[in-house]
Length: 177
Image (cartoon, rainbow, N blue to C red; front, side, top):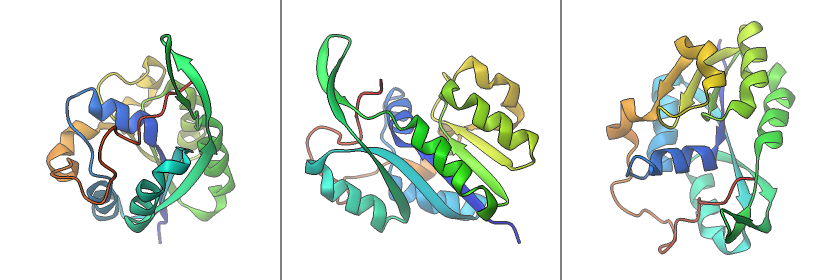
C-alpha cells in the first residue's frame, strides 16, 4: 500500500497564490490533497509568531502536522518584517520521514528544493511537485512532467470566506530570507 506524504512550504504557497489575486483555503487544500493524492500526512512548515496561535490551531484542526521555525525581525526591500525561512526544516523532515512514505509531494516552486526533488525523483519517491503559480524556479523545469500548478484546481481550494482565521493582515505572510 502506498503511503503518500506532502511537504508544504507555506510561505511560498501562500505568497504564490496571493500573487494571482486570491487566497487559499488551507482546510479545503488539505481535503483536496487527501481526495486527489491520498495524502496520509501533510507537513506544513511555517515561521512561528506567538500572536498567530489561532491560525496554528486552525491549521492543525485542518489536518496538518505543523512544523514551526523560530522567526526573527528583519527587513525585506527596506521594510520591517518577520523572517522565517523554512527550507532547511522542509528538507530535513522529508529525509527523516523518508523510510515512512512510498511517495512524496513537494508543495513549493522554490529552486532551493532542487536537490531534494532530484533525490526523490532519482529514487522513485517523487509523486508530484505542486507549484503555487507559473513563476516557479527555472531550476525545477527538469521535473516539468511532475509539476502541476495550484491554479489548475483553484475552484476546489480557494478561500470562500474567513473560517476561523484571524482577521486583519494575513498571518501566513512572513518574509523569506
